[in-house]
Image (cartoon, helix red, strand yellow):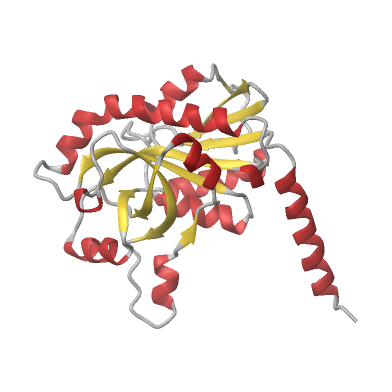
Length: 265
């Protein structure tokens, strides 16, 4: 006789399978920076939510609206109250992702943003990648099993038809809380076999896996980490132009998703 746990697991699997066969209706776009967010807000004609679904006092900003058959919620973490800069990084984005899933119950998460790329892995300025895997490179815990926990390797939701139709590049994404790259980080990024690096993807993936929400990662390259120019200088120089490439790619992805179920991606 099946145990209660077995029955519950079977019921949960059946619910997941059923959800994957229904057309996607709600997309949660998680974007770390205002510069990355606003072109998408304009493209999808989203309106700012003045009656926030989030707890009082948090700076997070929600834009929402219908685009074709999709309800789109775009969330960015707002500005630091003291310094006025974007609330980037894994702590801010993990909190934001958790609260957004709880409040909005999305069918699919898209974490869209800019990233550093590695020319040794074939990345060029303006390239847009659909990440296949995500992992951390700055959580080094040199104890058996804890080391794997620190890396936190997770796969993005598989989208073979999307990749084929849009001819997007794919590669592994590595996440850390620093824009620059220390020798320790470099060794970990190499171990992660990463093509691109960012400051939020693996944190979003962690929360999405906990709450069982399928997630994909779209990253546009602003700077070549193993290139000749200083990372910060190259990032700022290319940010505006690359966000345009990012916006175009996200639009193509959402147009492809419209009317489809998860299993068709």
